[in-house]
Length: 66
Image 1 (cartoon, rainbow, N blue to C red):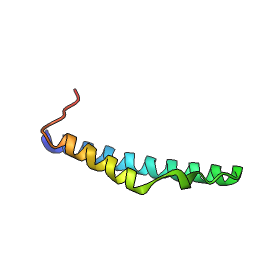
Image 2 (cartoon, rainbow, N blue to C red):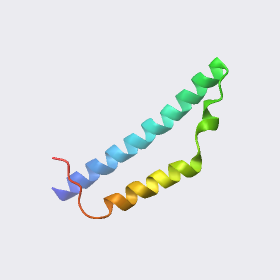
Image 3 (tube, helix red, strand yellow):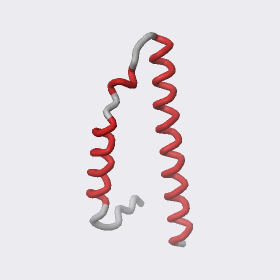
Image 4 (tube, rainbow, N blue to C red):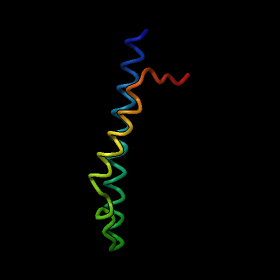
């Protein structure tokens, strides 16, 4: 049962990453088509800090959503 839950969580995480990457690509493409450089406003350091803060918040135990 726990393995099925873990596999499901990993699957949804991968799907989330794919959706996020596709969203950035689509926004960049639409921005270029409109003559706006939207990607310049994305700061990689801010993204890393957000991911790190999420990781430290979640390391305290199980965050089960049921």
